[in-house]
Image 1 (cartoon, rainbow, N blue to C red):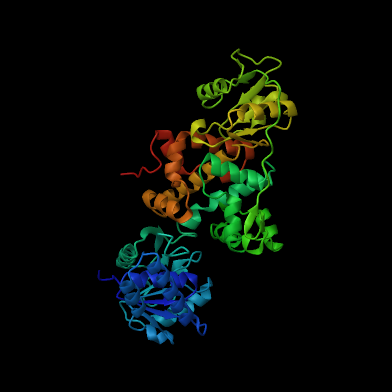
Image 2: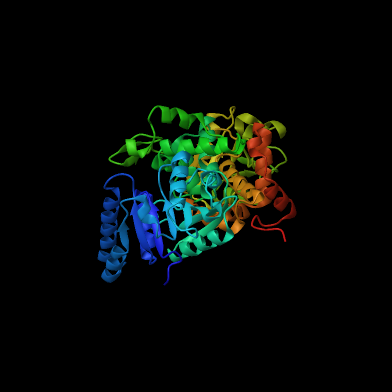
Amino acid sequence: MQPIFPQTGVVGTGAMGRGIAQMAAQAGSEVWLFDVQEGAAEAAKQALQTTWQSLVSKNRMQPGEMEACLQRLHLATRLTDLSPCDLVVEAVVERLDVKQRLFADLEGIVGPDAVLATNTSSLSVTSIGAALKRPGQFAGYHFFNPVPLMKVVEVIAGLKTNDSVCQRLTAYARQFGHTPVSAQDTPGFIVNHAGRGYGTEALRVVGERVADFATVDRILKDQIGFKLGPFELMDLTALDVSHPVMESIYHQYFEEPRYRPSVITAQRLAGGVVGKKVGEGFYTYDKGVAQVPAEPPVPSVTEWPPVWVSPKASRRAELYQLLKDLGARIETAAAPSAAALILVAPLGLDVTTLAAVERLDATRTLGIDMMLDDASTKRRVLATNPATRADMRDAAHALFASDGKAVSVVRDSGGFVTQRVVATIVNIATDMCQQGICSPADLDIAVTLGLGYPAGPLALGDRIGPTNLLEILFNLQTVYGDPRYRPSPWLRRRGALGLSLTHEEA
């Protein structure tokens, strides 16, 4: 296979630069390693040799292939040694001035047809290339760490980038065995932008004392299928990395409420409680293992009260069947008896609002999240309101845990936990499509590969139903009065017309 770029330079030989160099060499390119730190390029070459030897020992690479890749690695002692390169990718510190100076120097070294690419994750591609004489030959080429395992690459066009440059970078990524996605030059590009909703909304849930960190993590893993809860994820990435990204995207979008950071992470960052790498974050760590608090035990209840379900409950028929399967005594009168446990199942509203509007006895009223089919989840979530009696809370907990399924009881919240987090994720994703940052297909692919979500945001939105998501968001706006929850025009129009969230206009 003839590589798209036969001669590739990599500037910056840390973990990211080494990963890019590894894939370029494996794709057949002659690769030139350069780093301003003395000895760093040599160390990178040695590390790559160790990596390839490991692949050979696991029968994932032939010895001859390893030797060929090693022969294609070259050390550049000066930046001018990169003059033969058809492509130079930088993976240096995330500082605009540093990158601008580097590319200005490189432009005077490489040939006029050479492509220059930045691996920036948070800076504007257009701003980095603004002072270049040939900005058409400059683009963003954002890989994810570790590069060999994270199989998505964002190809970002600056305002003056030639289409042919992005086309060549896209084809080159495919030669790596990666999946390229095309993004406009906007804050966070695709993956970091689309990932804004997961952590920030979870932080709002905890900030309202709806549930603690561990409970939120359990709910989002068990109800939707996220591999890591938001607080596990932030502990893994570390707040000294993730909080500045939250602030950066928020400010780059001129304080757009959808991206609003949290005082919780700001305070923890200031206190040095940044995550797993320091042994303390949202969880404490013993020898690298999170110390997760045990779940509250299921209450012991000798007799369940009869259950009355609001006629406005979502998935009411399914909820009735679930109660029947659990052996509950179900009341079907127009109003509950004086002894009944009262259940509501709202989309986006809180239990308090429904108890007030439907004139229910709040002391006996709880909510259950029925956004998803009960059979498709590993956990049920109940919500009290400020007036709910302890005996009714315990009875509901015991009833819904009686078949062995996990149950979490949270405090009152518009949209429980899962509804509001998922609705925020989908809403941000649909607005990215509305802005034309990327195609719907590229968005779902990028998020699935880059963030490890159980499905792309648009596919997830279609599973829940655009009209249901609209109801959740409109009701969250009602409960909180926050423009954060205003639905994107893309979501609002497709929900109104019954179209898939992936639908593009003709």
